Image (cartoon, rainbow, N blue to C red):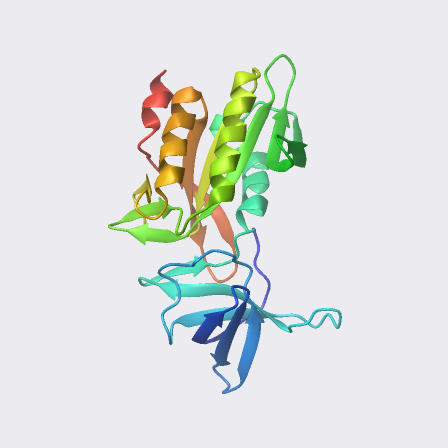
Length: 238
């Protein structure tokens, strides 16, 4: 997935109201950028952190800048939580997700459950439909990628809806995409959201497949890189 070009470097002053960030660019200007990340961004908000913004000249936009990247723990971390929904279809087209191969139709944002939309619905001849929920991961703890970084009632609801799809005879996959290169495995941050951790364990035992991949990250692109082990890999042997 290509990133906007060019990116402009600066230093983070503060992030506030969830979707706003003040940044001092290298040329001395202080600007306000849109932050496409509704989460807590735990571990990414150090004052003075090196960040990169993309400019936008569209007069219809309220802000001329978008926050794209931050350097955290010595590595580049994209902050836009919508990136994985572009990364995964590209990876599928390139055959880089063998667990999800063999489907000839990919539909996005399909309504299901109780007013929800599934990120991807994969369909193919003579096989069950596959519901794929994609989650962005940026939090790192003790060398492991961790999710969530705060309470996510919406995420817990999605897990229950995936379980319902399995009960109806479909295949359901929860796919965590880690937008950084320095994690060796995936874990659930149960201390940050015990309800989500419990729901994920129940979902896995009910037949929801749990997958995790990290990404290669540069200032030009973010692409799927490698499979990461999770606590739920016992299901891969079933």
